[in-house]
View 1 (cartoon, rainbow, N blue to C red):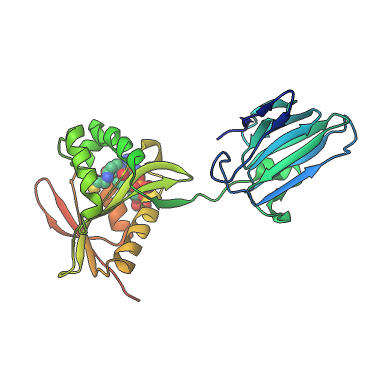
View 2: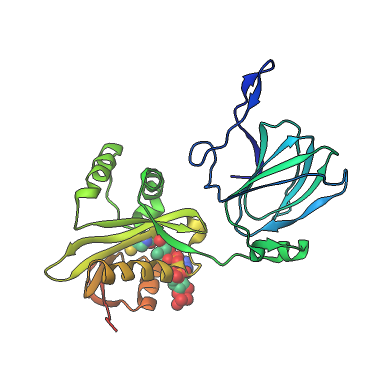
Length: 288
Ligand SMILES: CC(C)(COP(=O)(O)OP(=O)(O)OC[C@H]1O[C@@H](n2cnc3c(N)ncnc32)[C@H](O)[C@@H]1OP(=O)(O)O)[C@@H](O)C(=O)NCCC(=O)NCCS
């Protein structure tokens, strides 16, 4: 979610007064770990001047008027004015903000983390120069990944490279509904810096032979050729060893898919069979 206004219900009427309520897991998009409020801030002095690495916040002006000037790491700037106690401002991580208060302003902040000085950027330069470590993780293969897979595997280029058969929406739905009962099959989404970019897993998991067939693809083409194959294979190999106690994994790839073959060779797979339309490769898993 971008930085944006965040409205909560205003309950009551003008003869009795009003109440606005924030509740964990109900109307707040994070667990509230801390609340604080500031008051008697000198009027019209610019305050704030910081950003956070991890912290998310929802801020209210429970009294008075508070103006925020925000900027994200790409330089997108915006101005938000809180002038009503039920109108909040959601500020995600990595947003620089400067704040101006009216004389009677009381700022209430709901925060996603406990106080941590190391979470702050205190200078604008540090904030703008900060680069996040790229993070690749395996995620649940849920309906969102299923929907994306439909588009990815129906792209003619990816369909060819992955040697995927034709399938209908119905086939896909049926396959998805059997996933949780299929102990020979393991599939995960691939997330890179919180963006879903593909899927990978193991099929034909054989507990007698202690082997399985690896499969995987990056569906978002802008992430091809950036060295991510090594991270994807490491994640799946780690599961193959820890969860399924496998001794080896194999895969099938079409001879034209030179990038994939290169990626698999780099990781340690060896070719054990070349056929006209298929190359089979195997990786022996070390237990050291
Ligand atoms: C195949 C795939 C998993 C490889 O992952 P990747 O992160 O894109 O690959 P990498 O960046 O690690 O590159 C692997 C190797 O291929 C080389 N390479 C990159 N682009 C290439 C290209 N267009 N043609 C040939 N080789 C290429 C890289 O230089 C690297 O080799 P090197 O380390 O010796 O230089 C990924 O590209 C993909 O999913 N593609 C689409 C679907 C697919 O083919 N799935 C596999 C089905 S078996």
